[in-house]
Image 1 (cartoon, rainbow, N blue to C red):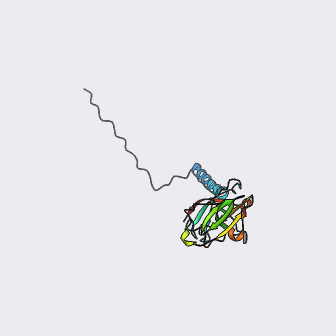
Image 2: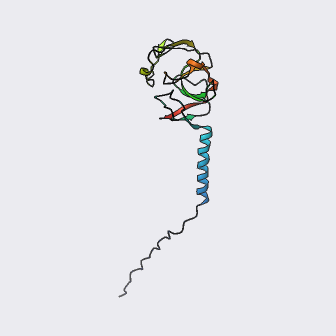
Length: 179
């Protein structure tokens, strides 16, 4: 009778954890490509901006960050309710405001309530208890312009003070506000 002996069990050599594997060129290129994509998005698509005043409270408080969608918005697609960024007409500083009316519309404020083309506009983002008794207008927005206002109507310096803003001066739309 032939007796078979059990096959030897292979022993595994423990990996040497003291040596590091060199980083492959694919990994380096993947990291560089990722950084390039983030940089390109930052330059041409999305830009963060810090809100410098409290004129957009409660939507965006002073010091909050807003992500802007670039490039410049098409003036023909900007509508009421859109939050936009443009250079302030008086000092050129970056300004964040909400479009409340576009070319051809008539704007008024009656006892702190926004009225566009004779109709009251619902604005859940405005705290009306902070702006009681405010009156303005009516004024008609010229074609190719927008009428902008801050959500904190009591302290906002906006189109009621410096007039309408040419739609071509709009630099970006606010994509996402962070408070």
